[in-house]
Amino acid sequence: MCLLQARIKLAVAVLKASVNFVEDVRTVMLVPPFFFLVSLIFYIFWIFSFMYLMGSNDISHKTNTLPFANVSWNDVARWLTIIHVFGLVWVHAFLHAMPQFVIASTACLWYFRKAQKQRSPILLSICRSILHLGSIAMGALLIGILDYIRMVVQVIEVREQGDESRRIKFFLETISGSKTK
Image (cartoon, rainbow, N blue to C red; front, side, top):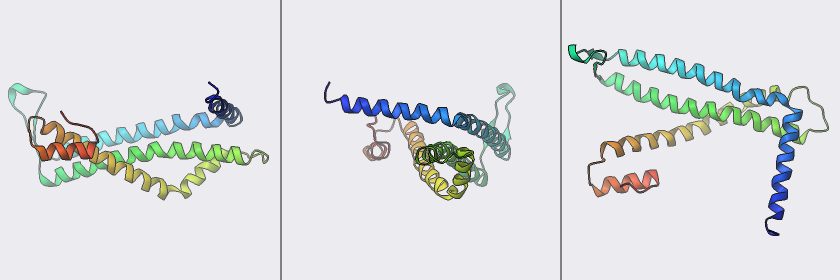
């Protein structure tokens, strides 16, 4: 117990600082709901544009399968769909990183400028996020690429489930980091 006493004191000090931060900058609690609404608007837009993209393919109905239909993909629509899904992954990572940056920047401004009373550290943090938009977008791009590769590997894994090829299993284990069955 004596060995963990220093860590427990540090955890208590971090929690006290967090409580003081939220008490002093109450508007920080509005950042996650705001970005949730922005994300919701983007996802609705993405779904409608995806439906439009799907509608650009050749769709054929069979009389006994209504309301379902068969979609015949053309090459342009296939590549646009791949790019569209990657855009979803990238923007999702970006919309996840922005509130993290705004909250972290607000916490830094609050902690290092306690003596100077600021009018609104949230607005200053949003201005900072605009200045650092390229870095946030680049980080989101890297995360988006890795997430997209993970999605592609999962699709390959599902498609090749019955295949006993050692090369495919090795590739899937290497990329995903887990053993395939």
